[in-house]
Length: 485
Image (tube, rainbow, N blue to C red; front, side, top):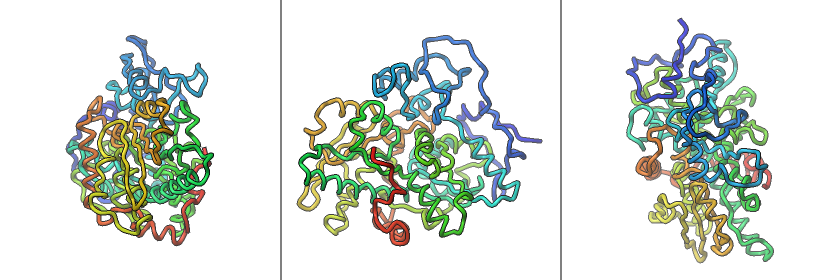
């Protein structure tokens, strides 16, 4: 009898049933590749009642509106307008259009599940199952974003902040993945590329008096970049051209890894699991070939639950080598301030030739949950001034202050979601709304993992060193960058 999937169990997933012993290999699911997860069927129309809701685009690659579930409570409007400062704010778009930065905070705060991520679980599942049934030649690659390891466990009644990365590797192999890579590797790659871009930015600013005295802004967060495009296009020339760590990672998987493994790029199906609904949007930009599917942390948890995989009961596994492992600096990318801290570790060594002292590796001035933070870092005889912003309301405050040049900042990290990726729109809905206490537990999980890593600086990652020696040769490869904005 063909297994059916319950929409209620997916959207309301509040508990996990007891799971019997798992058979080795890929876990059994529906017998046919075109079997439909029942919770993914279109909702039936409902009569409007209550105040209102954001006007969601039916063509959004990241956000999906389920009209039948909507209570017209107006929470999505409050979050988008008052917290993210997007809805109802004028910008670089026609007044008739509803702006969206794809952050997914509306989905994270919708208690009725009327607004969710755009589901890509069904086609992703179908791709694996159809290849298996037909004896196809495709190989499936899973990319795991840093914050997933400390948030996924919440969907299985585990303590927030618990690092489940090794159990997750085993779970993904049971789902049918041939290779499982840690995006902390992609984060390490981003550190080297962005640090080189920062040094070039500072050199140009010092040598050319006509260069505006503005910082280099990070580009890891596609929601932040979209926010700038919509509301502050004048800062776009100062935004890094680096792709996000996931897209960088996908790009080298489809090129260098494919060549090393003698696999045709079209036979590699790359699926990224992220806390971020905006990655679904980012995947559609440019060539759209770096990553084939993007699923949220929630979708990953639902997938495992529906196929009877009990995460806490799994044995521990190891990420695949070659492009699979990252440093402690890559791990903390999931926290606000993590990108800055990782880049500073790298620049410290590049400028001094020395490994940073322990107090530099625990650089507390860039940590915390204040929406706007500044720090001055002395490296050798120079001082670097960095700014850290999380939440687009804080970004708006900085950019509307008129003091950007006056602050004389060199580098500004911006994350659209409060807390960074650990508070992303695709994370488990353990609390609605998410509290800073929960964010802190998730952040602590990543910081604790960083402390246990033998390698804590991106440049020391041997797999990354090999990638540059054998393939990239130097920083600035167009494979890892977008066109100048």
